[in-house]
Length: 187
Image 1 (cartoon, rainbow, N blue to C red):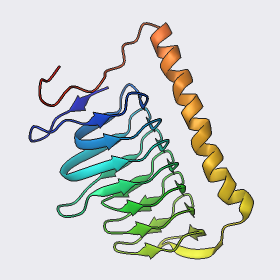
Image 2: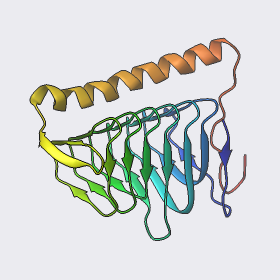
Image 3: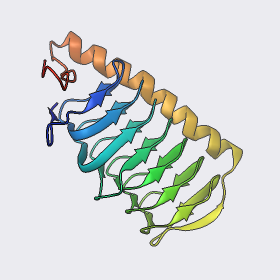
Image 4: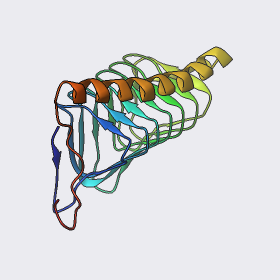
C-alpha cells in the first residue's frame, strides 16, 4: 500500500488504523485511531489536508480529494461506501455516504446523516443533522428513524472488527503492511 509524500509531507496514520494493500494515501492525510482505508481507495491531499476521524471506514474504490483552500475533514464513526467520492468537504460524526454517492466541494454535512446510494450533494450545500438525503441533486427526504441512526454506528463498529481480521489474515499470509514513515527521518 503506497503511502506517498507530496511536497515533503507524508501521511500520518494511527498505530491501530488499517490501510489495505492497494490503497493510495498521498500527502497530508491524517488517519485516526481504529479507522480503516480499504482496497483501491485514493486519498490525495495535494493542496490541503485530509483528516479521517477515529473508527471511520473508507471502503473499496472510494476517492477523497481536496481543493486549494478547502481541506477535507471526515469525522468519527463515518462510513464512505464502495465507490463514494468526497471532495473538499466537511463531514460531521456518524455519517454514511452510501455506495457511489458524491459530496462536492465546500459541502458541510452535520452529524447523523445518511447520503443515499448514488446521491449527489451539490457544491457548498449544508445538510442539517439527523436526516437522509436522496437524489441528484441531493435533497433532504426526511428525518432519520432511530434504527437508521443506530445502524450508522453499528456499521462503523463492524468495520473496526473487520479491519482487525483483515490485518491478521494478511499478516498470517506473510503480506507485509506498510507503516507510515517518520516525516523527519523517512524511516
